[in-house]
Image 1: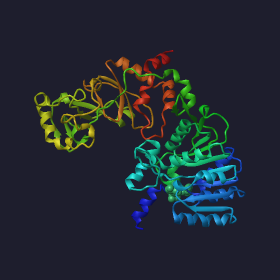
Image 2: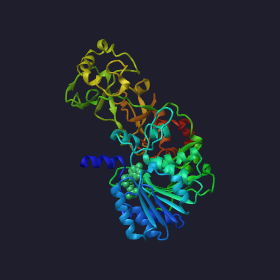
Image 3: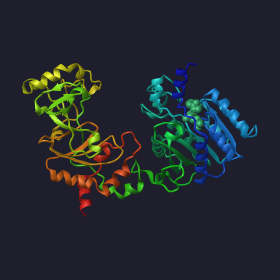
Image 4: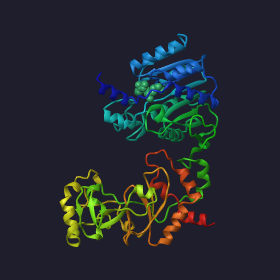
Length: 484
Ligand SMILES: C[S@@+](CC[C@H](N)C(=O)[O-])C[C@H]1O[C@@H](n2cnc3c(N)ncnc32)[C@H](O)[C@@H]1O
C-alpha cells in the first residue's frame, strides 16, 4: 500500500492509538469512580491493544477480549496481550465491529463487564469524502444507507453509533462502559440514551487533553456509564469534570424539558428568564466577497482587498465591525462595508441612477460577485447581500461575536455620524436610542445572564453561541430581574 493509501485508511478508520499512560489513567479513573473488579473486559476496536494490556495488568483475574478490523493491529495486540496474560484468558479477533454479533458475545460474557476503549474518530461525512464504507450495513425503505438510515441524519460520528449500539446491548447487564470520544459525541449519546429510554446510569464525563495525547485539536472526554438497572434515567444528570484527576464536577449536563442542558443547576436557577427576546437577535450582513465589499481606510480614501482605491457614493459605505472587534470590545475600526440593499431581495438596478459610481465599481467586479459559491445568491439581484434589513442600519446595537468562546456584549454606536454594520459572524440587538442599548447591555453582562447562558451553551462546540440560545433569553424579564 502507498503512503497516501495508508493515510486514507487511517483517516477512514479514525485511527488514533491511545498512549499507554492515558489508557492507565482511564482505568485508574474508572476504578476511583467506583468500578468493581470486572470478570470480563471488552475492547471493541482495540487497535494495538493498549487498553487490553492495561486492563490485563490492572485486573489480572479478568478475561480480556479485543476486536479490531486491521489485521496488522490485531497481530500486534495479540502479541502484546500474550506477554501479560496466560494463554486462554485472552483473545483478540480480527473483525469489523459492524459484523460482530454483540448480543451473543455479551450474553456469553461473565459480569461484571467492563467495555473500554477508544472507538474510531471519524464521521460518516468524512467517510463519504474518502469513499469508504466503515459503516453498519443496514438499509431502509427509503434507500438510505448505513448511518443515515439509522439516524436520519446526514452526518454522524461512527463512534457515536458504536457506543449507542453497545449500550443498547448492555442495558440491564452488570456492566460499565468507559470510552474516549469527542465531547460532542458524549452529548449526543446522552440525548440518544434519553430518547430511547435505555437503562443507562450516568457515572461521569471527564475532560481529556486530546492535543497532548493525540496531537488532535478536538474537545475530547472519557464517557463513563453503568447499565445495571438503578434509577430512572429521566431524573439523571451527568457530572462533568474538567480532567481525569478532578474529583469534584465543574457542572452537570442533563436532559431538562426534553433539551440537553450544559449545567443543570444553573438551568434550574435561571428558568424564569427563558422566553423570547424582544427585539429579535439578528445576524450581521453577509456578502461572501470581502475583496470587493470590504474597504479599508487609507488616509482620506478607501481601498479594497484587491489593493484598488475605491471612490463611490458614501451612502453605500458603512463603518464595519467584525467579530474580532466585537469580541475585544472595540467600538470602531478603520474598516467599512459596501451595503448594496436596505432590505433582503431589494432590486439593486436602482443603484445605476442613484449611485452611479458604486454601480460602475460593482459592475467592474461583477464576475467576482457572480462567482460567489453559496446558492443563497442564485435567485437574487446582482450584488445582493444577506442578513440585511432596517435593523442593520439602527444607530445603536448590542453585539456579540458568534466565533469566540466567551459571551462578551459590546455596545456599538454610530461612527462619524453613520450607523455601524456588523459582519455575519456577529449577532446583535438593534435600538433607536443609546439609553435603551446601554440598559440591555448592562443586563446582558449581569451575573444572572451569564448563569443563563452557561446553563445552555456548550463552550467546546464549534460555534457555541447561536441565535437560538440568545433568542431564548427574555430580555424584559432579565432587565426586571437585574433591577430588583
Ligand atoms: C481511535 S483508534 C483507537 C485504537 C484503540 N482502541 C486504542 O485505544 O488505542 C480506533 C481503532 O478502531 C479501529 N477500527 C476502525 N473501524 C473499525 C471497525 N469497523 N471495526 C473494528 N475496528 C475498527 C481502527 O483500526 C483503530 O485501531
